[in-house]
Length: 234
Image (cartoon, rainbow, N blue to C red; front, side, top):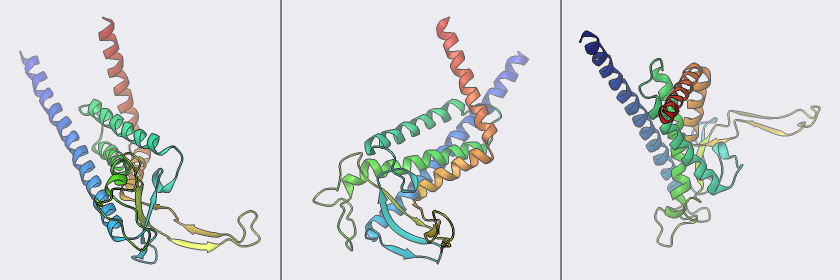
C-alpha cells in the first residue's frame, strides 16, 4: 500500500508539470502571434508599399511583402510553402504533446519550441488569409482591410508582410578587392517581421542553450514510438 501511495504521489506532480508546460507554450504562442498580426495589420493599412519610416539611423520600419520564407527569401512554390508551414506547426504541436510530461527537460526548451511554433503560425495567417482580406493598391495609396471589391489573391496565396529593417552600417568595398571591389555593402539588409524574429530566437536558443534537451526529447519520442510498436505486435 505504501508503494501505491508513493506512486500516486509522484504521478500528480507529473500531470501538473505537463499542464504548466502546455500552458506556457500556448500563452507564448498566442502572445507572439497577436503581436505579429497587430504589427502587420497596422503596417499594411498605414504604409504604402515600399514606404520607409526611420525610427533611428539604424532602425527603420519599411513596408515590403514577399512570397517566400523568412527575410524575404523565395525558394519554393507559394502554396507548397504555405502547406509546409502548416505541416511544420502541426508537427511541433504533436512534438510538444508527446514530451509534455517528460523528466529532465528544462523550461527554456519549451519556451524555445513555443517561439518557433508562434513564428511559423504568424506567417501562416498572412499566407492563408491576407490575399482575401486585403487589396493591393498602387502607392501612395494604402491597403484596405475587407475591401468591397475583394482581395488581391486567393486563399493560401497571400504575401507575407515584413517591416523590421536594421541598416546597422554600410560602405563601399575598396576597388582593389577582387569580385566585390567598388560594390555597395549594407549590414543588415534583410527586412523581416516579428514572426521571423521569433523563429530565429527559438532556433538560436535550441542550438546554443538547449541542444541536449532537444536530443533527449527526440530520444524520448523514439522510445515511446518503439513501445507503441511493441504493444501492437503483442
